[in-house]
Length: 368
Image 1: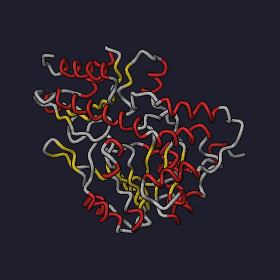
Image 2: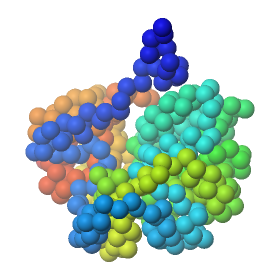
Image 3: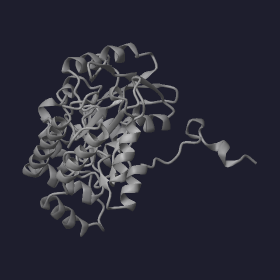
Image 4: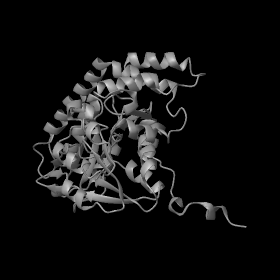
C-alpha cells in the first residue's frame, strides 16, 4: 500500500502553511506597536461599522453574487458594470483565482522584485516557475526595469505581475511601460493595492478597455483600513472576468464584508481623511531623516517607507531589534543590492510615528 505522501502532487510537497510571525506576535501581545504589516492605524468609520452590524444580524442568509458592490466598484472606476468586476476574500484570493485560470505546472510567472510575497505563494502552489526581475538600485532609488521584464519573457511565460505603487519600494512605474508590456498579449496583472493614497488618477484601469489581457487588482486592506474584513477585487474585460469567475468558490465573500465594503466605498469623506493622515505622516517621517548621513529613505506613495542604512554601516536587523526593545514591531527586509541595511516601517498613530523617528535617530547616533 502506498503512503499518503505518494499521492501529493510533486510541486506541493513540503509547502508549509503561511504564517505571518509578526502578526501572530502582535495579536498575542496587544501592547506592541504594529508598524510592520502595511495596516491602516485608523479604525473603520462608523458608517462601515453600522453596515457590518446591520448585516451581521442577517448572517443566517447566504449572500448574493455582490451585484450592488460590484456595480459601485465599476462606477468608481469608469467601467461598464459589475461584469467587469470580480470580488474576493482579500486580493490574495483574487490572485489565487486569476493564477488558476492561466498556469500549468512548469510554466512561468514574471514578478518584479522586491515585491509582494503572495505572487510566489500562489504561483508555487500551482507548480509555476517564478522568474524574478530585480529593480535597479542607483542614485539612492529603486527604479523599475521594464526592459528587464520584456527580456525575461519566454514561450513558457503565462503571467506578468507588477505592483504599482510597488510593495515595498512605494514608487510608480511610468504609464508608457505598462502599455508596452500590455501589448505582448501575455496576461498582465497590475497590483494597485495602495493606489488610493496617490489617487485613482494614477491607476492603469483604462488599459483594461483596450487590452483584455490586463487585469487590475485592489484591496480594502490599506487606504480603506479594512485588512481584517478581507475584501479585494479585480477589474478587467467582461469576457476575462467571466472566465475567472468560474473558479470562484460559491459565496466566497461573506455578507458582512460585502456590505461593509459598499459602505466604505460610499464613505468618501472617511477615505479622504485616512489618505490625508497617511500622506502627512509619510512626509513627517521622510523629512525627519534628511540630516542622517548614509541613510537612504525611499520616497513612498503608499503607507510604508523602505530604508537602507547600509552606507552608514548599519544592519536592518539591528534596527528591528532596537525597536523591539521599545515594543515596536518593524519589518526587516532581506539583504539585497550588496546591503544588509534594509528595514521598513508602516505608518502608525502619531505617537507611534514619533517614537519610530526617535528610535531611528538614536540608532544612527543622531540627536532627537
